[in-house]
Image 1 (cartoon, rainbow, N blue to C red):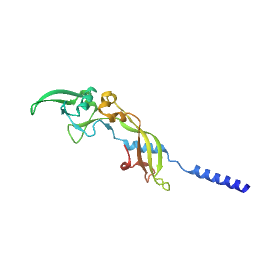
Image 2 (spheres, rainbow, N blue to C red):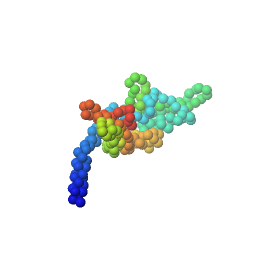
Image 3 (cartoon, one colour):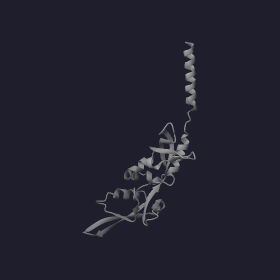
Image 4 (cartoon, rainbow, N blue to C red):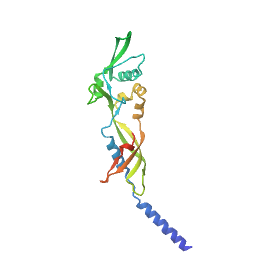
Length: 197
């Protein structure tokens, strides 16, 4: 009986020692690597840059709601005008207001094109980090939380939230997944081909 107790204690001690020696990866390094991958990336209102000034038919163009929300936010000015083309047709022309110029991000290679861009992503916490190969833990699948910092007030207006449903998500804490790879220098980096957002 004593031998069993001694054996059980020895096995428990060895298990505790092995568990205690298991090295945990510093989640702070993952957050640093994720935030580094976000550098230079901003959230933008339009999926693709648009050309200004832009015209839209208020009776049939779905973009009117978006353009009017930006007008209500003070970023666009619009002028209604008559255009003679297969009969009289009213078109609204939208262009940047003074306030809009400060928020407009022009496209360097396409004069006249641009977007309203704001803020940047910031990873705040790691929910779970799993090595893709426990025998060689140099690649992890990391589930994390992030937020968008630097959101201007015009993004938070009810008109903008209704016109751009994605903005509501952009202004709250979100979850995403990234694959992180340990480099030969020991630093972690995001594998951009297997990561979101």
